[in-house]
Amino acid sequence: MTPVPLAQANGLVELHWRSPTEDPHTRKCPDCGADGTCPRAAWADSIIVRCLRKYWR
Image (tube, rainbow, N blue to C red; front, side, top):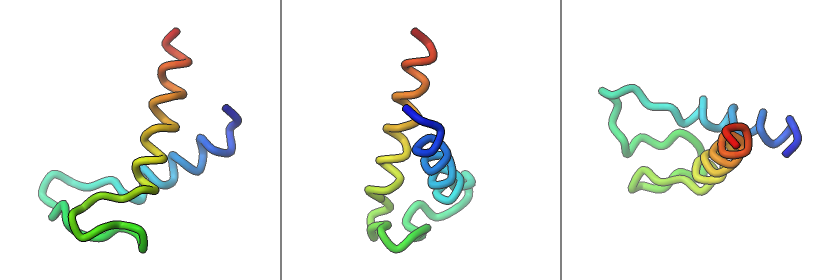
């Protein structure tokens, strides 16, 4: 894992962060679905989880 994908993932997570009072169906980027899901956010989550798992080993 290089710093570049991690930085991209961090930016996407920051973009998709929601406050507890925010409507979960609000679109944060063009790829966000009407149901509140986003493939880009899912990718970012997987990158960050992979980095954390590697770090914790």
